[in-house]
Image (cartoon, rainbow, N blue to C red; front, side, top):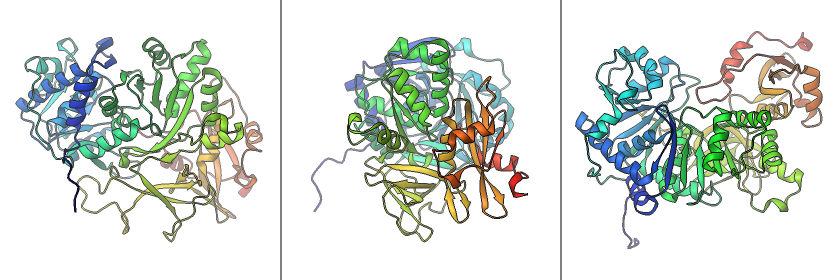
Length: 543
């Protein structure tokens, strides 16, 4: 027997209609290349999304085809999110930090029909224009005054296209399982892989974002998504805004500028923001140097890589800001866990709270997870045992775009490539990537734990740990450090600082210094390049 309820489809279009009806007066504020502070409402955003849908249809875009974007976090990019997806096409967000050959590969692989490009990124497209065969036109995201001098063919002005159309686009009735958004993995090995999200998956994740034990976003919040819209949908915040109605503040190209972020947070009274650890380091450094504050800020979400406890303590002790860690990945659209504690802060001692808040948190409803040993047998959730992390759920990838083979194991689980432990309350912590874990004397050492420990040293700006071959122990950890500006920290000082914070046998055998660490296009430390860089390294003590 089946239930007797309506079969309303969960689509981005339904989110847009709700946003217009219930949250139409909610504000969207943006820094853009042509306006230092653009502001309008959700209702105006969706009107312009309708104009865009008309314009793209006139240009020949059909349902199921893809539109690529190379753009910052701003109101025009949000219009593309809705105008493309709700018309039945697919919004393919492209990371402009990728190498040219990777850009060529994913644009061709996605078969992008049009590219929506911020003026700043026109040179990127000019350099590869003769290699991207599917692209029928480039749309510059600005007004006529923003149109660049270029030899690109079939160039269009975004604002001129919209001005020629009304807002009452006849949005099609879409199946909730139809594709709406496409994002490629960063591709540290081999070609990037496409993850094709369905309308249903992103609507369900929007619900999860707004849960109290998720991001807890409410209609009276003001949220600043510093995580880029060109990578996993800015952690779904542009869609969650339609659902919950909070004010949105977009930083444009200023997402890594501590001074600009402080001014934006202060002037727009932002109380919630999300970003990767390097962004928060930039902001905290500026606050310390300038003496300025972020008095409205209450909570920051941190993901993308493990967050050092030093960042959390700086926010809490000097600015009264609560740091909430989370974990996810492109293949999960991206949200998996949030570290919302099960009890109030005062229920924990300082030591208990510190041990808890560095964990990635509990899985939100919609994500199931387990950890398994090398025989694919589950290991206990005791906070000690660790193994390969596997997940499943309605917003977890089943297979990559244009790949015939499934990504899932024979039991229907997706192997994340992470090594993790989970405590009795369900709080998960990533201890390493499967390919990065250090095997020393038959035991595993977590490179992430060592990096976080070293980052706690006040004279360390950034740290990375890789395994180096050792004649006796198979591998031993090498700590690679970028000194903080103006500091001259020594290896002995760092090792002494770490001495009582980690297991003795985990202690790095050596510390070496570099001017900078290599990063992937999404800002993570590029361990593969580090291993190539130090391929000939040998420990002095190993002979």
